[in-house]
Amino acid sequence: GLKTFWQGKSLLITAGPTYENIDPVRFIGNRSSGKMGFAIAETAAKAGAKVTLIAGPVNLATPQNVKRIDVRSAEQMFDAVQQHYASVDVFISAAAVADFRVADMAQQKIKKQSDSDEMTLKLIKNPDIVAWVAQQVDKPFVVGFAAETQNVIEYAKDKLVRKNLDMICANQVGDNLGFESNENELVLITAQHQQTNPLSSKSQQALDLLSFIAKNEAIR
Ligand code: PMT
Image 1 (cartoon, rainbow, N blue to C red):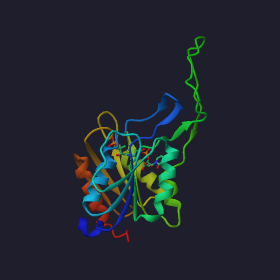
Image 2 (cartoon, rainbow, N blue to C red):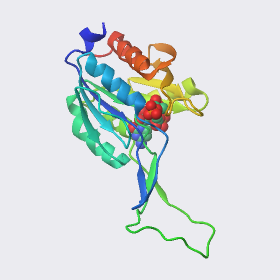
Image 3 (cartoon, helix red, strand yellow):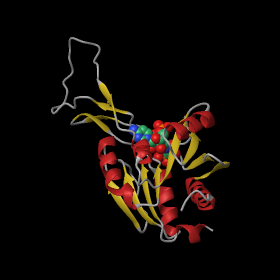
Image 4 (tube, rainbow, N blue to C red):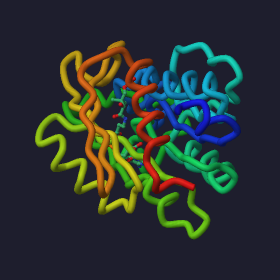
């Protein structure tokens, strides 16, 4: 079962949003609370896994027996993941990483331009962290999440293939769904298997997810 598999395994998890600074007082962010990733970290640690949790800006306590690394931006999260992925058995990317960052962060607070009703921010693409890990020769078992507002399973399967993931956890997001809430509904998908876990607490979802991985023979 769960403990037999996870005892002694090492697990790297990302959780929460990333904040992309505009200037010293403003940023672009998203509604991820980190609850899903933290629930996975807590449950895995209880099952005996060695857990490293890379957390974006969130308001959550560190679960017991979890090594936590705090980051703010996608680039900082990428650095931390690059330092840790090679020594783990499983990598779970539950973070809502900003796809873009501000091209030129202002060093001083941007002043309101009184002669204009518009302002333009130039954004550039952030690295895709989970796709990068999945490309490495020494990659761990790589689990992504897919947050979608429609065609959830179809888009998730597309991400599984496109990002070369071993597994993807699809969740519908939107008003009171996925982000921020205490409950979630996940569809767990690998090349061979698909399992729908109906709405339950994020702790229960974490338990079901970790059990699913334990059952999946694809992992060493
Ligand atoms: O944090 P909570 O409030 O508990 O909410 C949980 C959640 C909804 C954030 C979580 O369940 C979830 O779905 N996380 C992934 C959100 C997301 O960014 O999905 P995506 O479809 O944009 O990205 C797909 C995958 O690529 C994800 O594993 C993501 O971590 C990863 N990614 C995306 C972009 C990027 N630059 N680097 C990445 O690694």
